[in-house]
Length: 110
Image 1: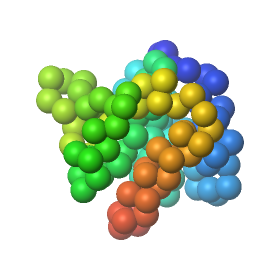
Image 2: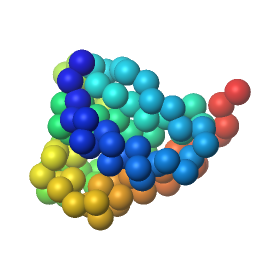
Image 3: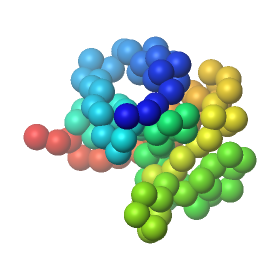
């Protein structure tokens, strides 16, 4: 499993106040779960951002942003942000805010 440990620590620091935060190894990287919903993750040095289908197209227009594609078919609502787009805490925070905003729209999991 390969993921940027420095980026993982930055994400942990930002999400540390969520009492139901979990980390899980999946997709060959590391995922962060809040309230049992996948929020974001790291594959190699890229942020895997769960932004939802409504913001998906507009966020893909940003620099350093790619479709998340594991199987030859992009996963609508999931985006990769390359490391160049995460080089400041402010940029990372903005992406994590998009993720949290989306998962807050989801119904609670039992």
